[in-house]
Amino acid sequence: MKDFNIADICISQAAKVWAEDGEVLATGIGLIPRLAASLSKIAFNEGLMITDGETYLIDEPFPLGVERELKVEGYMSYSRVFENLWGGSRHAMVTPTQIDQFAQMNISCIGDYASPKVQLLGSRGFPGNSINHKNSVFIPAHTIKSFVEGEVDMVSSIGFKKENKHQPEIGKVVTNLGVFDFNGDNNSFRLISIHPDVDLATIEQSTGFQVDVSNYVETELPSSREIEIIDYLDPKGMRFSVFGG
Amino acid sequence: MDKVISIDQFIAELDSGMTIGIGGWGARRKPMDLVRAICRSSIKDLTVVSYGGPDVGLLCSEGKINKLIFGFVSLDLIPLEAHFRKARQHGSLKNISELDEGMLQWGLRAAAMRLPFLPTKIGFGTDILKHNSHIKTIVSPYEDQQELVAMPAINLDVAIIHVNQADKKGNTHIYGPDPFFDDLFARAAKKTFVSTEQIVRTEDLGGTEKAIFNRFERNLVNGVIASPGGAHPTSCAPDYGFDLSHLKDYSSQVDNYSEYKKRFVDLEPTDYHKAVGGIDSIYSLPLPSF
Image (cartoon, rainbow over all chains, first blue to last red; front, side, top):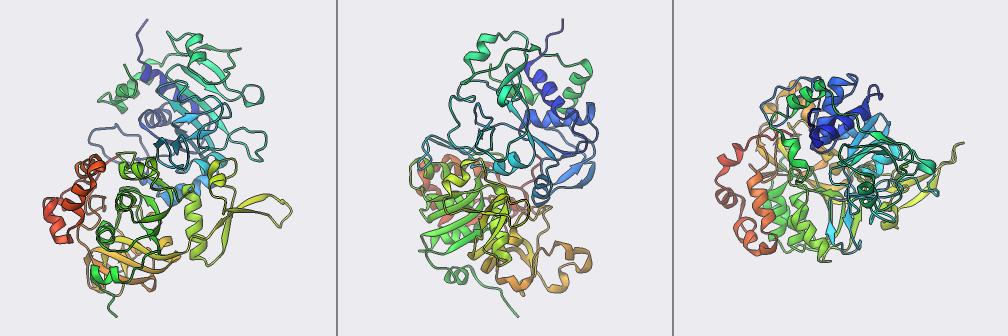
């Protein structure tokens, strides 16, 4: 059996989150999600709208880190991104610093809010994204620091809390250990597939809350066509630097 | 009509305690010449409203900010802004209003429309509302009766914006592909001051072909300041990209700010150009590709 890299497994799995979305704006924030959105547009859903990472909608995904020719199909300034996302026709993949049992996410700060231990970005568009459209999650290092016990320090994204009148829509959560969703009983966190060479105990020890492991399979490896496309999209292999070790 | 003023005349228009909105986005098209001039001035206790980048960082390290209203502070390719982080982590910037990026836009838009607020569902279920206790909710008067966030207007005393071209009457052109929310900053402010790469004659603005790049009207503009290279170290597409090595240097000197200040802030623009390698080196900075 061919030996696959964790980066390729994650990109392949992440790409599949957009497969059934039809014509939506697919925003992959960060290298792996971005490669995944590009792979998805080529391999799974040609209806996806993706940007050049800045202002234009592009007709064909291009390789990262090398000279490129933009094949533009439309315009997507920040103002347009907001108009689009408020209408709900977007599916983003994001990498929060913390996520909790309610799918609440934090990119704002760690520790006491008045004088945080670690100041991060601020909540950016997470409050608006999470109440308006579907979000999936990519976490390169699945640990109890990212999958926190209790609740995240600063709730940037709405989660599945009973008192909320609005509920989020979470696609998949792809990590270096497996693929998950929040479609267990009462929107609990659920293992869908476990990556090769990962054991259940590692997943449970690396997650600060209960994981529903009642029904899962081994993660499907990327096809040779997917690998070919990923190699085309990332000719310099930047994706391998995302994962430690 | 001639609205062209010097940087000193711009500073004379400001007072301590004002609410100042800063155009641009992250490390893109920030009016840095004007921000550095504020740093050199005696103005203080500002309420700053920004999609923040090094504008916010510099003002943090200068201790100019009484209150920060923001959606994020980032240098784009360098995700975390070191000077802002330090101010937050050391507890010197406690007075903040952290908003969703869209709520910030909504607040500016409400001010621009002379409304007290605009409704949105954004904020529910997050700690944004917990940490912004001044933001209230309303109930829809229609059949749906749903509760909505009443995002209050963010009224600005002054907006500062950097553009590619302007004429002396205050007609401005932003040639970068994304005008961000500069138009709303201008509309939300009592007075708007625009720094510009070039001041040209009205007839040289490009006529019908380029009129689409005029993103807001000249009657919103109170002063035009010549500022070639004035967004450096942020980008000003299509004229130049951001100066990543300068931004790295700036970030690394967070604990040695007085040195950075001496080298790059306590200088008039022409001396600043020399300090960063000359105006031609700014204009040769390549546009980034993401």
